Image (cartoon, rainbow, N blue to C red; front, side, top):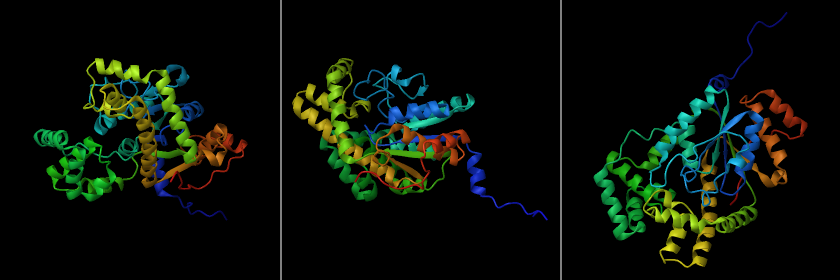
Length: 355
């Protein structure tokens, strides 16, 4: 006699499957996200949403390693060249504009692939974190900005350490913008922003998501970073920054805080030699890559994709990712079949990365 009792189901899976799909391909700078994201988009009929805080700016092509039209291979890309360098950009703007992009992608029955290395922005989108509840107080912000100019970034960072040690630990001393925001948040609410962020981090994903982080051996990644910087200089990074400077761009702008741009501005202003500027870009980019990986290690539900594990074989990496997406129900079974043909086993998430 057939058992009339219904099979046990996972209610959490039903909830997740009712959410809109979202694929994330993150990782440190220069790890090879761009090429892989194109192949992934072709395989799953996706569109790419950039999670890069520099590529949003027009006229900043070389220093941001911005993808070219030819490299896009016909795949729609979003959140690239949407602002001028003198316009402000922050996580709230990112969220708003990303959601507009996602609406259109879903209407076209496509799957969005958020690709980039700005983990804070990715987290904000993934968990739909609300940053608008407490607006900035202009007078206090201006006071902090004056303190930064007069006494330096270190002084401001020491103030933050006094009221929110955890935030000071997480925010680099030279990141004046985030330091000010943390102090401002404490001033307005009496709550530490680190505590607020911890509560927001506990939120579940607002999407039926799959969060890949691409990584590689540290020495290979650092070699690629150095080679990329050399290539940017050969392509005309100094000339690009000179033009932006002629248009009135300066280091006080959010856009000009980007790696490569602030150092070349310092060179053009006579504060650094050319050799020192180049070495600083390479060194700080390596440090930045390490901080990116530290951020991703703190994230939940991350699927680490180590290039070295796949012998740096792009086809094998893609096959593995397609299999994972099919197993999660984000794409159809054809992706899983494709992965099986490549004999790639869909394994459990393994936390990893560069130390």
